[in-house]
Image 1 (cartoon, helix red, strand yellow):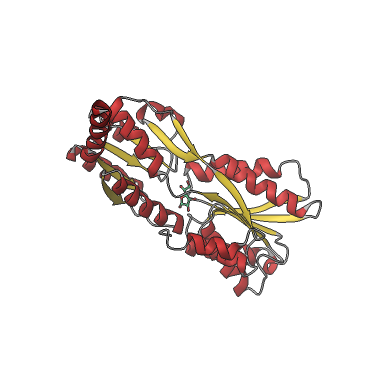
Image 2 (cartoon, rainbow, N blue to C red):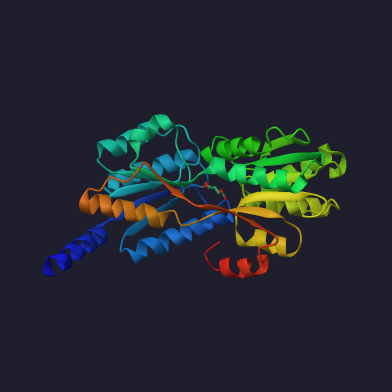
Length: 313
Ligand code: GZL
C-alpha cells in the first residue's frame, strides 16, 4: 500500500510541478470564453499552473506567446491554432526545447503531425454532416435555398464544417447552397454578413435556411433576420454548432431550430494525457476525439439553457 500511495503522491507531485503555457485564440465567441473558463478550473483541479495568453485571433500573437513560453521553460504548451498553416518553425523550436505541444479544439495541417504530442478536438467534418443531415430530414423534397456563414478563413474547423455540410446535402437536388461567406465566428460579423445575404436575396424571402459554423454567428444572423421583418426558426430554418446557452434561448423563443454540441472542456483530457506522459512516459493517441450531439427545439431548450448558464459562456 505504501508504494501505491508513494506512486500516487509522485504523480500528484508531478502534476503539482507542471506549468503549462496556453496560447488561446481570443474571446471571439461564447464557446471560446467557456473553453478558457473551463481550462482554468481543470488546471486548478490538477494543481497545474496554467498561463493563458489571449491572441485576439491573430496568429502572430500566438507565435509570440509560444516563443515566450519556450523562453520561460514551461513544461508544456497548449495551442488552439487559429488557422491550420504557418506553425512549423515555432513548433520546431518547441520540439528542440523538448517542450511537448498539445492542440486544443482545432488542428494544424497533417504535415505538422510530428510537431505535437496529441490533438484534443471534435470531428468537425462530422459536425457539418450532422447539420446537413438534419436539414435534409427537415426539408424533405421541398426546394430549399441555403446560405452559409463560414468560420475563420483557414481554420481547420471551418474547412471541415463546410465539407461535412456539403457531404450531408449532396445528392439533394432540391437543396441549393446559394451564398457562403466568412463571419469569422463572431456575432457582429455574422449579423453583418447575414444583412448582405438578405439584401442580395431580394429581402430574404427566397432564403429557406441558414447554416452557421458556430452559434454566435447564428445569433447575429437571427438579429439581422428579425430586423428585416423575417421569421428565423419559422420561415427560415437555422442550424449551427457549439450548443452555447444563447442558441437554446433563441430555440425557446421559436427563433432557432438546431445546434450540434461541442464540449468546451478540451483542457481536461489534454491535461490527463500530459500528466500521464510526464509522470509515466505514456504516449497518448495522436487524436483524442470529443463527442458531438444534435439538439433541436424539441429538446426542452429552456432547461438546457438554465443548465449551461454560468458554465463560463
Ligand atoms: C471549434 C472551435 C470554434 C468554435 C467557435 O472547435 O475552434 O472556435 O466552434 C470558436 O465558437 O470560435
